[in-house]
Image 1 (cartoon, one colour):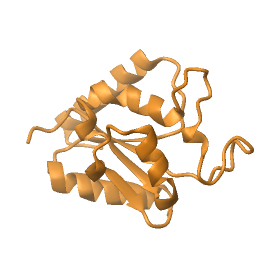
Image 2 (cartoon, one colour):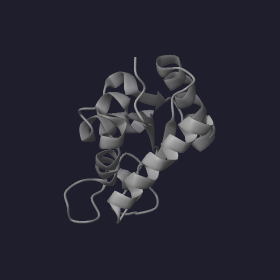
Image 3 (cartoon, helix red, strand yellow):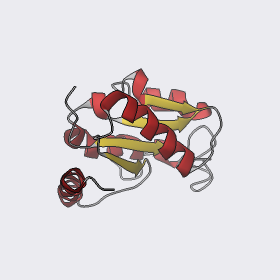
Length: 145
């Protein structure tokens, strides 16, 4: 299997407290559309990363069990095997560790991963994507983080 240039891992946890009353435990900020586009922050994050990943097969999402159905609803193209569901949220480090182990099993130790919050808004997507491509290439050439 040929590795994609970058395997994005979207961290889609959350407690739904930051944008209360719009967000709730089962509808945190990443499920909201805040720019009038009709696309949630989670969907917009995937949109930005799909071309770099080379398609849905290389996109991964880590989420909490109480948010898994919402992720499936918002990202129906995401392969079920690429949805890692934590039984209990334990913050970023365990999510990064678990996803790294799973992706390494599938793609090997030479895979280049990037970790992205599901709820960020990026104004200049072209520059963001160009920066990611350059960073992934540097990581590949230098065998570095």
